[in-house]
Amino acid sequence: MRPGQILVADHGGVYVIKMVGDVRLTLCISFDQFIDTMFSQNDFCEVMFDLSEAEAIDSTTLGLMAKIALQGKDERNITPVVYSNNDSINRLLYTMGFQEIFNIVNDLEAPVTPAQPLEAEAPEEQQVKEKVLEAHKILMGLNRENRETFRNLVKMLEER
Image 1 (cartoon, one colour):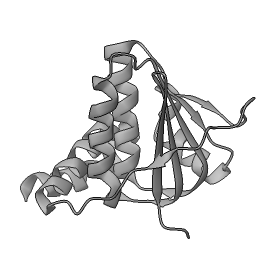
Image 2 (cartoon, helix red, strand yellow):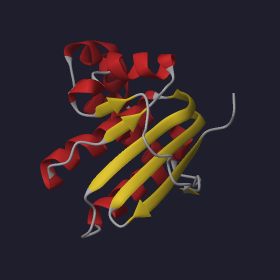
Image 3 (cartoon, rainbow, N blue to C red):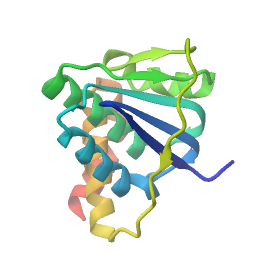
Image 4 (cartoon, rainbow, N blue to C red):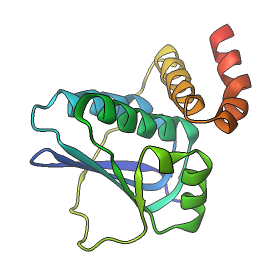
């Protein structure tokens, strides 16, 4: 598997987030900082995820994706689009309940514009723990299956 990357681009308030390879929590702090920056922009009006080159996405990253969808709905009344043509990734998205908070499509009429990579920072352990906890609490809020799946992990993180 290729190492994970998150590439981002802003096209006049329309943000494209492309995930490539094996996307893991090592990018969670940079990704969360990008989310904060994106929502602080006055022209932010839409977000699209391109998962066509993603090979795997961990649950922390999925939780941060869900954060974008939920915050986008609350603050901007937008529903992000997720483009994925990978059956394995699509099963994961549907298992997590993402069809309830995203528009999931498996083809595009136009190609996705290239983007700049987020740089992985060397975060402190406490920062990572907080992001992992936040992301999994978000996932737990999506449906009962997620609550059961992540309950023990969240409990363990809260006790540390």
